[in-house]
Length: 110
Length: 112
Image 1 (cartoon, one colour):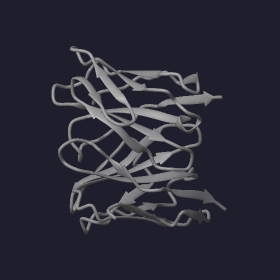
Image 2: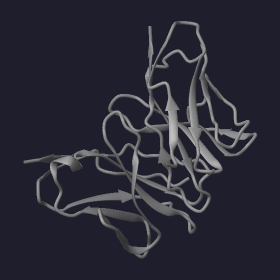
Image 3: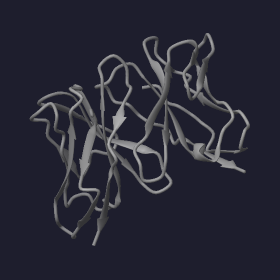
């Protein structure tokens, strides 16, 4: 099982771009990388998923280098409502053991 | 609306009592999961199930039990053997292609 390592916390200001990096050195060939956002007392919410290179959706971008041993979640122009815990998850198929890391607490200030 | 329904939202357990947390999904997903979250901590895997009538232990299965008699239901029982059950419990379901998990709103379990 690929273990993930993320910074414990990050601080930012409104309107800035935030990049959160996740290390997953023993990622398997068929593993995907998925990022989730969690607010207090709620379940995590899917943000973005990728396998290689770059993926972009309406809320974030995900950058994955060629060796796939790390990934970077990019949040453009954050707002106060982006204050949350962000988790990266590595795995290849639902139904297998999906182990979350400790997550990164992002605090956005005005 | 497809989703995951967890109930109750809050649950209190007396010492020596077993309690059961409900998780229902109408997504037609095969895989279902139970996670435990302690204050300020990440999610820890308790049990997971890939298909009906089959389930596997996660990292912290001791003191918990599950069943998967129907595809849409994956109840979690917190037994009296779990000495520190106070936590936020999250249920999730996923499709088989990749792990885009959809989570329920959680159950907060406390000990009286």
